[in-house]
Amino acid sequence: MSQPAGRPNDSLAHWVRRSGASYNRIAKEINEVAADRGRHDIQTDSSRVSRWINKGEQPRPPVPEYLALALSRLCHQPHQLTPADLGFSDSGPRRAGEGWSARAVVAAILDTTRSDAVTDEHTPSHTRLLHGTDLVSAVQPWLHLPDGAPLPKPTEAGQRLGMSDVERIQATTSAFRHLDNEHGGALSRLAVVGQLQHVTHLTRTRTYTEETGRALFAAVAELASVAGWMTHDAGVHQDAQHYLLLGLQAAKQAGPHGAGSAGTC
Image (cartoon, rainbow, N blue to C red; front, side, top):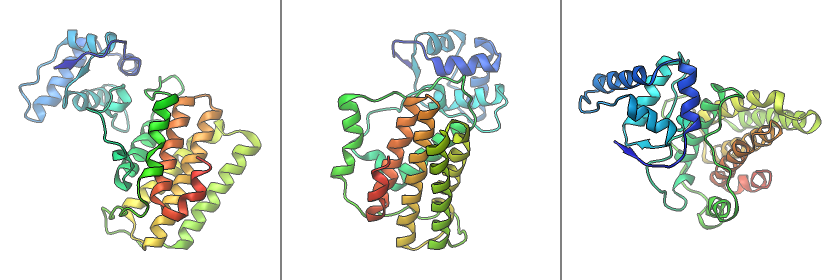
């Protein structure tokens, strides 16, 4: 059920401590979640939970999702935790540029901002700070992927969004950036994270023209940039880098609109 990793999982340990539950209780909760979904073949125990935490082993899917559900219940979280919140990596390596599609970028930003909003300064980050070739590999798709990839189709028949709406978003972002430049952004960071989540959600729930959609992604990129620099001010450098990379990906989706945004990411 598990794949070895090698070092303790601090993120998972944090949420287990926060739950106040024993390893045995967590195992039983996972088994109940699995049974509710018809997976009676999944029967974990306290020793497995211990190995996930202390040895950094990673359970095979769908156990990470069930564990996230179990800890969401035990911690009485208003929003559901994700496997990423618990320090679990993706199931396998991605092809170059796979995470740069408009749909993938939107999903990544919404997941990141939602997770950020329900954690506090004591929660260990599960994001790795990239250096050297890893960082170069993370930004290379900007150079190699074509502009003008299809924008995501709205998942709901929502209200139409126009350029005037995007301009209001841009004005709010400029105000946040000015605040960051003048006073530092640590105290306003979560307000920007919330705005980033809201604006990114608009890409899924509003209808818009091609030009407006590209401008909307440029606005998302600008907000991610501000969130990144404010997170840097707060001293969480790996998360700051993650926001800046998400901003770069959103800027790519903006096409020509995103050229200026990329320079601030």
